[in-house]
Image 1 (tube, rainbow, N blue to C red):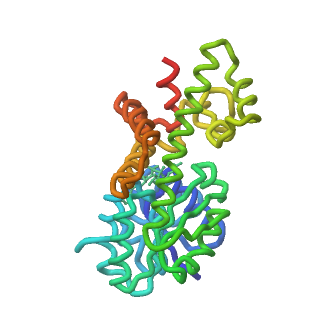
Image 2: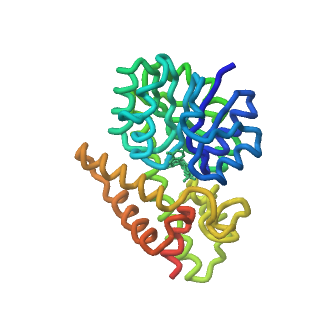
Image 3: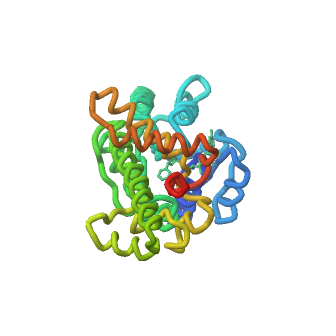
Length: 294
Ligand code: NAD
């Protein structure tokens, strides 16, 4: 049986790891937060007390961490896992991080005889729980193919975007568009409500018209319009605004390095920056609608 170490059992990593347990894999998980670890154990996972304990005897490592610095700290340097993992270990990083760090981690993994892919995801916490995520993978074809059966237990679609780091490039483009669409959807709803429309009626109209988009249809930011979204639960859970701000920063950095224009991405980043600076960083990113409701 394949033994998996899963590092980072937060809003996304928790349900992803639980789906692997449900699929019959032996999964040992670790998270710095006791609550995340307890939740995983309560759903049949094996909780480790340290990263070292989680990876002992594992043939596959999966990480789902906040940002590039966490991923680099886990794998690289004298204290990092790459110094001690057995050759041939499959390493899958599903975190959303900068492409440069993903490429560097991929380069050092290859040098150490490890099989690394970056495989960031889309689909949110609902997709993580339902096992319907989309994976955007970067790395050697053989490594991506070796990861496919595992990824299929957590998601529905697996795209091979290119070499190491390519998954992160695709993810940054997608999330820049998502940030713009969530801000735009919020602005349109707030404008309609200010002019006397019911947000649920307006949402239905726009979702059946040319303004239709994922934020409007499946993740409506207006409280009470949809039941199973963070907007109707005090913006708790979901995808934190501070993580969206991170992703818009990654897209902006990428645009700077490649001399690409990103005026709308930069505008969305500035909106999320104000929102996070006002103390809303831990709320779901759809809470950006509050910036338009004042
Ligand atoms: P989260 O903050 O809920 O989870 C991250 C977890 O990592 C936390 O539980 C934290 O305690 C743990 N952690 C941090 N450093 C650690 C370490 N050294 N060892 C072990 N555990 C450690 O965040 P999340 O929403 O699960 O997001 C994780 C990643 O997935 C991010 O890169 C995010 O951008 C990306 N992502 C999130 C969503 C979403 O909807 N939440 C969607 C797609 C992608």
